[in-house]
Length: 266
Image (cartoon, rainbow, N blue to C red; front, top):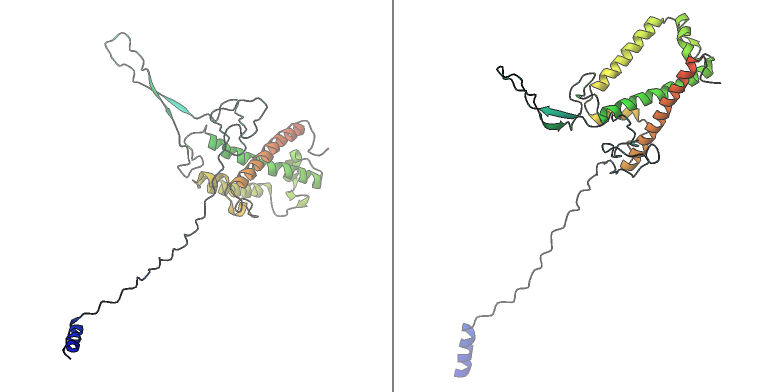
């Protein structure tokens, strides 16, 4: 019929509604785990008063803040005080004047950096510097520890005082009572000079201030410092200085006893 035909024609011209779009959820990009950074060992921050002083009631100097291992505020002669330079103006140079006034003080300068700068035996610009003193103290304390043990062990093994060991060497070079054939005092002296000279030149060629004092490597065979954190490293360095200072006092005592004709052992 006509109604059916019109309805069919109308349906042919109708457009189908588009299908609703389904929202596609975008997944967030996977976050990469941040790479772990190995924190470098830093020296523990210490303030004056956190550690013990060299005597009860002592006043710590301003330039000894306790940040160095073994710092007990002991500097009675102010040897480690930072060097201060006084800057003067030029003197008056008037040739026609009866008197020429001297230049007045116009300022003061402080040297803040005294790190080794040249590969020489003495690479420091300033002799009176706390870091140079620390290096010298470590060297003296280590030699004192070796010397005190060596003097005691040699006297216990041979019965000869360390002060008289040189007299025995002049007769026949020996070590712990065992003769060293084929070696003379001159050859032993040459060997010691060459060996110690090489070590001193190698040490002076190092411009890293910390490595000059704590070379590590073969000098830390058990890895105590290499495997320690900053706090433990500070404690080990302090312990070394304590032993070294006692050894230096011990060397002074046995030197006085040797001058009086006594040995190390009773």
